[in-house]
Amino acid sequence: MSKKQLRPIDAPFVDLGPSGVAIRDRLKHLTTEDDKVLRLVGEHLGNLALLDLKARCADGNEHSTDTWAARKQGLTAASSSRWAGSITKATHDQWALSRRCQLAHIQSLEAGVRTLMHRLSQPVGEKDTKRAPGGYRSKGEWFQKTRRLHTLEHRLDRARADRDNGVVHVVRGGRRLLNTRHNLAKAQLTEAEWRRRWETERWFLAADGESGKRYGNETIRVTPEGEVSIKLPAPLAHHANTRHGRYVLASKIAFAHRGAEWADRITANRAVAYRIHLDVQRGRWYLTASWQRPAVKTIPLETARAKGMIGVDTNADHFAAYQLDRHGNPVGDPHRFFYDLSGTAQYRDAQIRHAITQVLHWAKRCGVAAIAIEDLDFTAEKTREKHSRKKRFRQLISKIPTGKLKGRLVSMAAEQGLSIVAVDPAYTSQWGAQHWQKPLAAPRRKMSRHDAAGIAIGRRALGHPIRRRTAPPQHHQSDGAGHRAVQADRDVRGREGTRPPVTERAHDSRARTETTRGTRATSASITVRDARSAGTWVQDPLLITG
Image (cartoon, rainbow, N blue to C red):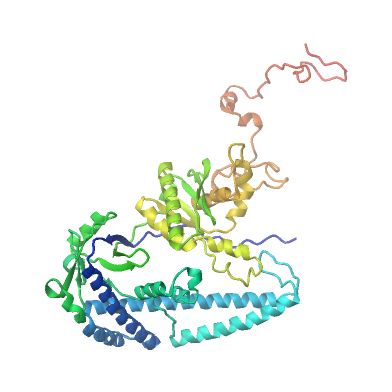
């Protein structure tokens, strides 16, 4: 039987911190005229954004600075130069995002085609292996998969042709909301409610910041006192209620979160971008302020390891976390932080944020400097081609919010002064359960496979091997099959030497070896059977006890 070949394990690294900040506050006490003006501006600029996106998609790969300048010049006449700059920048960002999604879709189709071709080449009934999936169970399933292979190949050819020609498929307002129009009953919406939400999502009320300008933004300006004013587009300038074609809202803004940092930026005339949007369900207007900040300088990996670490295993319904000291030894009991991902998107996001907050507060109480997580990516594991019949398994891994969780954890940990160390997820659950689940289980401590995986993740981030002890040598080497502690470093002398006798490993062995060279005499026995003999051995049925 050949030895199992393990895949290479990537080295752990400290993840980069966030590079931007966004805060939000509600626009309260708006008048009827304020609401009317905001709707008119959003609808007018939204129509311009639609036309600009259409023109950008028509340019495809032929886009250049000249075509960009021509589009911006055409938008300036119907709005202003600053509004035109914000619209064209948003258009380019949306087009670039669609190109990245298109490439990811092509890679997913290629992986599906490769998997199907491999499984179709296997004999019917061939069992799966850990390296690759096996054949299909029946001839009927094999035939159906041949048809699916032709379908995926057709989609792949079409996607590659679109990418070569610079064609992207963009829906301003969101494809999900567009498809909801055909399932209004399931979404519990009427046609009028869907129409209002659709039109609102296609509005445009966002302005990029400008360093050196007054309060960091000339288009949507917010003063330190919280007064919000908007530069109206040229066709709507007659609605202005102040000079220079501006409209001042009756609402006052007061950012509760990061308000001091925001005030420092606008006082120094540093760039701040603003976005105004309407929550159709609640009927409320909100203003979001965002700005860039210098990338947070990550601490060296050795500094992150100095105070120990917390290993966190991510699951479909909870975080399993365990604290480890800098030597890789588990400290205390396992901790579990549960969340529910079965509701709406807002509910799921709130659940993740609440669980992450609990993990961060516990990490601060433990006094560690970093949290170790797995660098997970389930893109290849979610395909129906690889796990065709394992629908529950595909649903399980699809529930784990890998991308959103990592982004949330990195940004929230940076605010608490903690670093995030990402490790390779290979074999953490398997080896953690093998080496740590049973030894740490106790009547008052229930150890799960996920808790043991948290220890494995933490030890890998600390640079220690996951197993508790090194493999024993062969019987013809060193000390036979005896175990050695893994804490001894690789360059320590005598690490591979024979184990000392039991008497020299006792807690008082050093004091005794300095005074005498013999073995320590045993204490007086309280039984006749194991009493120490004072004479020579003779074949006698009676023991000499005197």
